[in-house]
Image 1 (cartoon, rainbow, N blue to C red):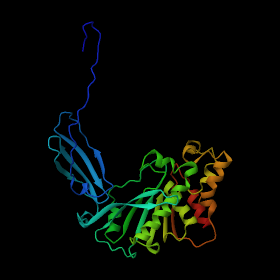
Image 2 (cartoon, rainbow, N blue to C red):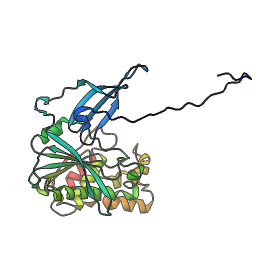
Image 3 (cartoon, rainbow, N blue to C red):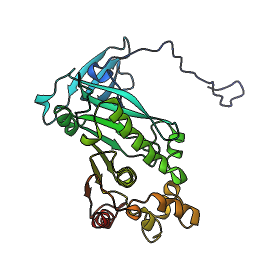
Image 4 (cartoon, rainbow, N blue to C red):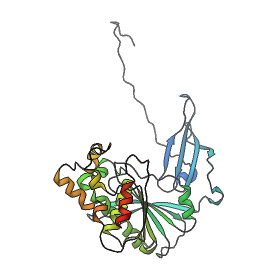
Length: 309
């Protein structure tokens, strides 16, 4: 607007929110671990908001939400391999908590068939990552559904180092707090076993890259926690890798793992680095993978660990 003196003035505007509304998106609205993403809303004046939604028990779907009455219209449920075996309403997803070594409560997203007996006989696979402040994804996974239909439980362990509970959660699992992630994963294994959802004899843990570090460290320090460990392109020789500043990402990674040019930081990293802590003991079954083209983890790291084991 132009003022009487000809100079431009701006009046502040405020968005008035009259009331909140609950929008129900079918199966995607039940349970936990729901991911909702905005769609292609190109028309500002459109009477609907387009979103995509999914959860561990609900395949990705596209909805239009009416801005008038908050009703949702299903436009598309994306097909996926094995969709003929999917039975809506046959699964459940919920939140459980493990208590770590220092008393911290660690959230777990648990998915399995309804009415699954808690007698410790059913297998479970626990997933972890716990680094860089990244949240462990709880999307719909066809491979997980194949296991769930066979009586498995899928457990997402949101250990410290991730971003699930904010910046504090990341800070408590990085640098000189990194061991917290290992302790959290061990606590999750214990909680699943004690709940009767599974037992150590039929339980596995899975982690990739930084998550693979946690898995391999668990195998060293808690070899009886699970029956099997799956570590995909795992960062298992961290003590040596972080001392090689000729690698492209070493200095960049100091904020996450610590500046190992300092003796105290190096000693701490060496205390949990999986390759340097292999010992003469009975290990769980181990599956290690490597990649020639991974820019973060050299193929030699899991290869060295396999040879040493």
